[in-house]
Image 1: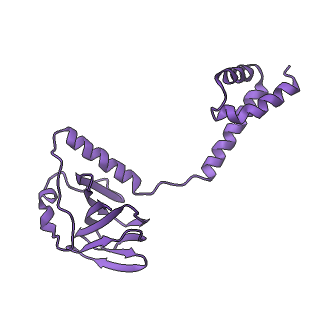
Image 2: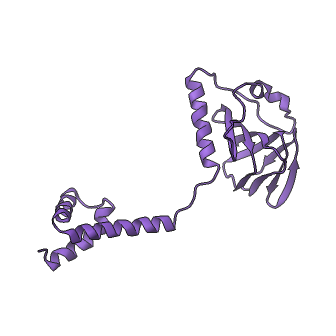
Image 3: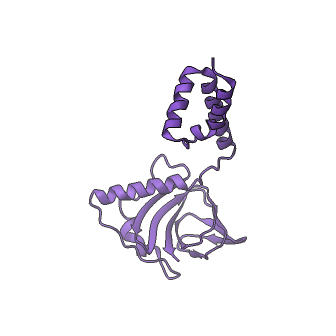
Amino acid sequence: MMKQADYQIEEGLIEQFVLGLTAPEETERINALADQYPSVQVAIDSFCTILEQKAMANAVPPPVTLKPAIMATIDYMERLTKGEQPGNPPLLNEKSTIADYATWLNRPDMVLPTDFQFIHSKIIGHTAEASTAIVWLSHLAPEEVHHDEHERFLILEGTCTITIDGNDHNLTPGDYLAIPLYSKHNVVVTSAHPCKIILQRVAA
């Protein structure tokens, strides 16, 4: 039967063992003891459960825009792999028009998928200076702040309200808006159908 002193030593090492911080010889010894003494395995399992519970209690859900952004990046890389030439959309500014982006807007693959639910994005250009995408929003884009990139919008279809530091900007097709650095902003769709946007992020 395991000696009480031995158990106390192993109990003191449980946290380091579970976190993978024990030396190889200590890890091997604890694994052997766990095979031999059920109480050691119970202690290991209990600490694992505690860690999992703490992780779940303190978990921060990822922003809802993260998955669409990842999927858009994967889609763009796959298109380039299949031979699409990198796009070079013009930089958005107060004189930009929808026609400036007709090359991309008229493409048959730049359409909204049938399983669209919240946000969909198709990257049309990416360089060290700027990333440009066609974005569809069904309801809203949550509040965010940018510290190292200028965010610019050109509304293509639908309407939305972009609130910047508490000030509302009601936008319709053809409208342009730039978000200042360090400003809290969010987007709320005000049309019955998705708001379609040219979204550009330019390095500060």
